[in-house]
Image (cartoon, rainbow over all chains, first blue to last red; front, side, top):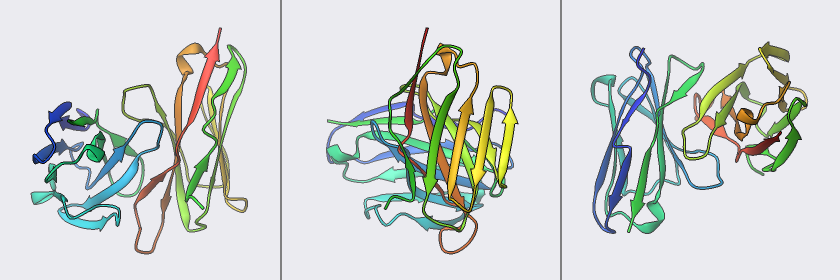
Length: 112
Length: 114
């Protein structure tokens, strides 16, 4: 059990560029979650998968955000045409069913 | 009304004291509850889970759940300076369109001073 792994750990991008983050869940965890967290706030739900199916996507998520989990293994989160308001920590978590969820180290995005 | 609410603090306690962290939730359909600890600049770390009414103890930590009052708490006994962090309460719904989604409060900042 190597834990949830996220890549990259830090990303600085210019406004208007596209970025993609990767998350590798704990092996055999069928659920994978994406959250966004800004300073002083709790993690904000973005989307989650059960195996390869995307079960829910936050209404707060604009069309610039898309997530995939091909073959129910790793997941990617893409943000198109980044804006300064997208600057945040992007957190991935995984769980086996609906019990405890464990987080990766996060990807800190800075849009300049 | 927020789905999960916590007092943002900061809560300051002396070393060796009991720290009491509280959380309320709005959706009676919530069935599973979790406490995470988050150090500054780091990701949340799971410290406790609780699924049924009553108390659950793990070392210096005790989680308490009262579904009738929609209230969850975390007690930290013999608080240490290393316990200084933000504590996040999370709830998971058992059914409906948001089945499985974890919803977090904004977190309570705890400071344990020597």
